[in-house]
Amino acid sequence: MIGKKLFIRLTAVLIFSLILGLSFSSQGALTDRASAQESLDSVQQFALPSTVIQEQSALAQTPASYSGYNLITDNEEKIRVQVPVEWGDIETGVWDFKGKKSGVFLAASADLANFYSTRSQSGVLIGVSHLLAQTYDREGLLGLEKRDLSRQCVHQGRFDYKNQFYSGKYDHFTNCSGTPGIMVFTTASADGKSLIMIRIAVVSEADLEAVDTIINTFQVLGDPEQDEHHE
Image (cartoon, rainbow, N blue to C red; front, side):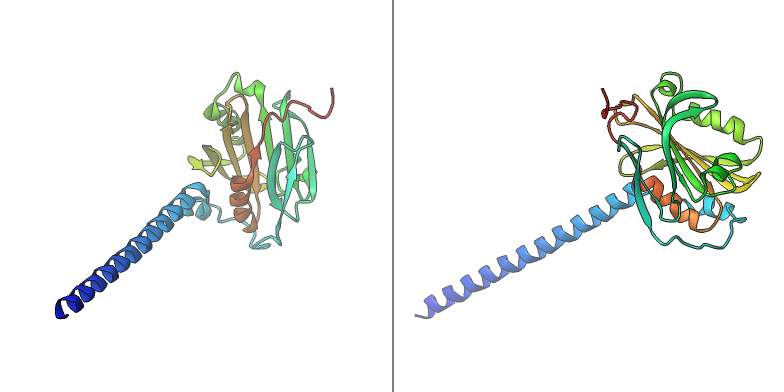
């Protein structure tokens, strides 16, 4: 009788130990998975480095942030990006780059005319081009922009960037005539057939947050230069 009771107690202890071990193992797996996901998210999300932010000392302090963000697209709904709600002046069409029709673009600002002419207005232009991809790579396209912008801005450096969908390079310019800062990003479409350039004018502190949002949300889906709405 005593032997039977001892057997039952030992069996119960063994079962409890197994359950406890599985519980710790499951919690450990969840912790490892959460840590891995946090690491993945940190890699996929772009944020301007502190050194770049510190170089933008001439920014207007207001607005310090925007009221929200809207998703905008080109006519084919293939170029997509979230921009500040306040940037309600939106345009898309044929991209005229350095005086030559080179692809398609999507632009947004509170005042596009001002953004285009003097860049004293914050805003963004995203250009997508097959033609440029036949001649330049990402750094080559940045070089074209640098050649022109260096005449009116101080070039602070070239940096790598990466988000969930794209990786590439960007140039940071400050003390430009008409605006405190300009950032130019380049990358390529998923199939490598198009070059993508994103030019952002930075005027206020809110624009630093806007840069992060734009770079983390822009996408080029399919071929924006192919008009699928008309034969």
